[in-house]
Image (cartoon, rainbow, N blue to C red):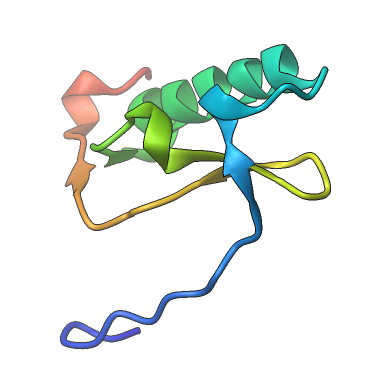
Length: 80
């Protein structure tokens, strides 16, 4: 990817909200931890966290989709 071209990749899986897999509660915890880490630690926040953007991959991992809207969190708002 560059400033003018966005490169994407297909990820196989199912929406986390639609999945009947037993590990969905764990993956919800992973998502919560990921968003808190983005907000309070790294300072780069994915700004479109609706259920359609959370995917359970075929190997049981969490994939956060659609990084088209991202916010840089000012340092003074992050956890020190």
